[in-house]
Amino acid sequence: MCTVTYIPVGGEIYITSNRDERRTRQTASDPAVYEGTTGRLLFPKDAQAGGTWIAVHDKGHALVLLNGAWERHSQQGPYRRSRGLILLDLADSRSPLQQFRDIDLTGIEPFTGIWLEERQLHECRWDGINKHHRHPDEAKPHIWSSVTLYDPEVIDKRKAWFREWIHAHPNPSQDEILRFHRFTGDGDPHNDLLMNRDGLMLTVSITSIRHTDSGAYMRYLDIPSRRTETGELQWVPGLKRQDAEHH
Image 1 (cartoon, rainbow, N blue to C red):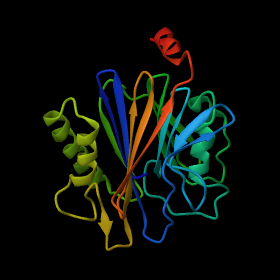
Image 2: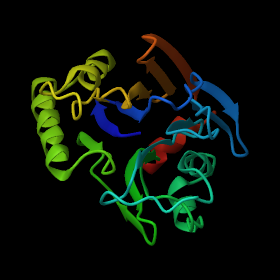
Image 3: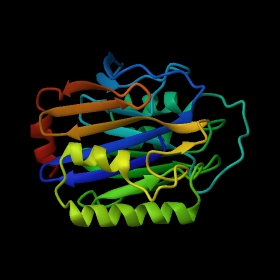
């Protein structure tokens, strides 16, 4: 939930997230399909709070979470609810954007949400007081880094790495995207994409969604065990036709 890329390739979209966590945090469950109140959801489940940092709904929207909003904040806990559970509230709705506008976030730690809804890209931030929304260009690739872990200079450096890599890989495969998330950096383990800060805070997993006309395909790399797991979620009948009507 600390480094996210969005990459459109032809008619497909790739959303990939590096999860940086404390070593002491329990290992998340592998991606699985769960029944929600508005449909089925595919996500890896956080073992500690039961939420998630990345999810796909069978109506086609996909969401991912980063810690923090605009700048590094001081924790003011205990918080009313975990951000991972808030992400599930947003994902398990007919419209994540409308749900973000309506939901009461008082007592929730700041976060940034990146999501795809009806093939449109949204960036929604909660800074602890106010909600913010903008609409990045979904036709272009983007990268985000968590402000709670990375200073502005490091975030800019990571954006430069991403621009150089996209220039060399204008139509990357999912394997190439995963390699970017695993091996990009300048040899500084504190700030490389696969980070490790003295074994206390480190990248514990990489999750990549391939969003297609027929469904979503998730690849989940558990870094400590070097396991790769997969998940799949087909869109509800008629979704492709509905998307075509919107575009």
